[in-house]
Amino acid sequence: MTMHAATALDSAFQSLPKTPSGIDGFDDVTLGGLPAGRPTLVCGGAGCGKTLFAMTFLVNGALRFDEPGVFMSFEERAEDLAANIASLGIDVPGLVAAKKLAIDHVRVERSEIEESGEYDLEGLFVRLGHAIKTVGARRVVLDTLEALFSGFTDTAVLRAELRRLFGWLKEQGVTAVITGERGEGQLTRHGLEEYVSDCVILLDNRVEEQITTRRLRIVKYRGSAHGTNEYPFLIDGQGISVVPITSAGLAHTISNEPVSSGVPGLDAMLGAGGFYRGSSVLVTGGSGTGKTIFGARFAAATCERGERCLLFTFEESPEQLVRNLSSVGTDLRPHIAAGLLRVESARPSLFGFEMHLARIVRDVLRFRPTAVVVDPISAFHGPNSEIQAALLRLIDILKDGGITALFTGLTASTQLSDTEHMVSSLMDIWISLRCIEETGERNRGLYVLKARGMSHSNQIREYRLTGEGVVLTEPYIGPGGVMTGSARVMEEVRERAEALRRDRERALRRRELDRKTAAMERQIAELRAALEAETAEVAMLDEQAALRERTLQQDRQTMAAMRGAAE
Image 1 (cartoon, rainbow, N blue to C red):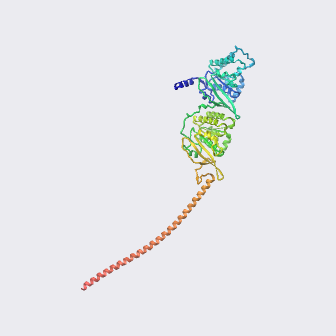
Image 2: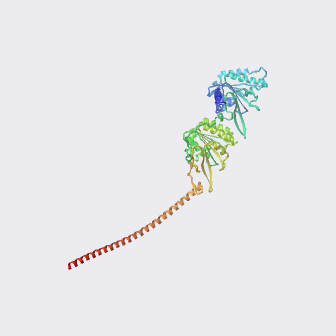
Image 3: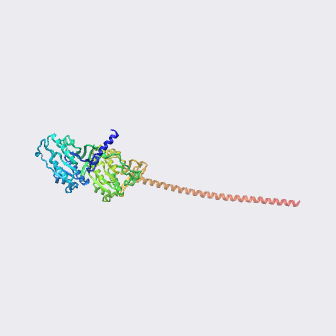
């Protein structure tokens, strides 16, 4: 396909009018929602969420997009349907009273249906058309087709009536959702509905290793591009959420802004002074190394900056987590009360990993945090390839939102675990916590295995979990390497004693040198005094000799004068 042809095709896809469903993630997967003014078939087995999906589509249209809707049921009565949907906090009677929603229950008994070549659905069209005009409906749901066509056995008649029904819905200009039950070896029981529908969505509720996972797949979507994978979706008290796998990618923006880890010593080990905002961080270690504490310190530091944080825990209840962290100087209660911190807890066995992923993504999209903590990812069990793929999607979704994520993982020994091998390459920063056992005690050590885009310390740092939080000690290297705990204390005591002994020895040698110096100086002084005395004596002798010489000279001169006078 040429570039021009591809551009034209994309333009054609984008030009198809779409009706947003308002279901978290689903509109991302379908690139905008369901085809506007066309019928969509939602099929699946019992309990997969077909009716809830259709009802959510109608309610969101009435509440969020000002598009009234009609729900025509062939199985559930209106009051039963309203009671079921009320568990999601939806006031169906209120919407009906406000003429934003119309619910009609049509009783269809197979024994009362007479099949013939002239049989048609004119009565249904009149009834449905009246409901559409009454509320000005833009959206319509028919639930389910099997009940409506339960009396048909002739495939030709069935196909003709299906085409009439779908064509009539298009003529009304409404966006229709039609539910159908899953057949054996085909998408629907009759195997015809998927061929006349413009969009077909398959819902699946499968059980693997006693864990239920719901998945959604778009089988076809005429005139539009769409995601083609299976997408996990979640049904809980907050409705339906779909994880948009195809939205994950590598086009997310980056930030050079560092955010604190909540541990000053760890920030100092990282060249940027913390984690880059929007990065993914993995903290691994054995049991008791304090992984949860590091995650909580990061969450607390985020809230202290006035930012929101989501903390997902799969091993402790929120109350237990808050209580335990208070013993290490981390009080999360003020942050929870201020609405900056939200703690979500669940047992890993409650859902499959895909369901947990859907739950996390749903909560992230609604709470809008700047940081997320998941503690621990090692609690999930399943094929490594599936867990890695799910984590990759989660990391990409968080990165796309500029959200800093910290994951913790349990390691069973000093060797790299399967979890570390599986996810470490996905992380921007990997911090390893280790137990160091020596001299009969157990201490804790930390080192940074990698930190993309920044320099970092290559030292193993001992850390202590104290009442003031996590305290990193300065690295200490003894004769045999890095020393920790009491061995470090003993070595420091020994070195101080050795230094004191050397100081005493130096003082003793200094005193001995001073004594010898003083003695030598006294001896020098005595010799100097003797020398000076001798020098003085010699000078006196020289003076006496000079005096005698002068006297002798004078005597000679006197005698010579006397002889001259005598002559």
